[in-house]
Length: 302
Ligand SMILES: [Fe+2]
Ligand SMILES: [Fe+2]
Image (cartoon, rainbow, N blue to C red):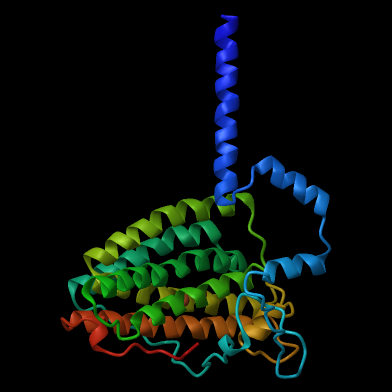
């Protein structure tokens, strides 16, 4: 028994030595050694910075705004900031004509009922939560078109970029509303569940019928415009405080200093109207029996 234990112990030591030699050969550090080193070194921020840039040997340049002040964001650059088109028609509606349109329309209408019930008039929270869903379709469609382009050795007509840009723009809406409304634990749990369901459902829906998938997003965006219009009414009534616009919003939408939450909701609503048009347009192209790549994507809004 004792000799068996010793033999097992020797085997474990041998295994560890082999593992350490292998790690040394490929440059991987044992986790405990790494922790020890970290504790000993305690690098100063400047030294740490040097170590981070050591791979390229080039430190990223300091980005400044037009007025010469430091650009605070790593998630986007000044060239990606834009002015939203506030003159866009907010009332435009695609009348459902064929069966696909009607299915897409009623799918969205049926989703509105539980959403209204859950959020009621909590428009700040509602906006933040809906943006977690709104940022999914563009990315899913972008991935699928990307893979299609690779599989078929063909161009995408700019649609991959346009759809991924839409997803990124929606995510920036979320990053903005996060600044004015903090999610609670049950909000986070809901996002987790909804994302798991919606990502997969939209993925399958897009594989089955891109025409339906884009039409559905077009109607979702029409609903988003309605929600943001209600949001504005609540701000105007004073039930939602018109707080100063978050700093990220000032830079992303190039809003003037002193802008407020109302100004942010206005530009976000204009973005939603743009997404509505892009997705109804994409669905129209598919309805005419054509591929998206045949018609140039509406790039350059953001
Ligand atoms: Fe959005
Ligand atoms: Fe949108």
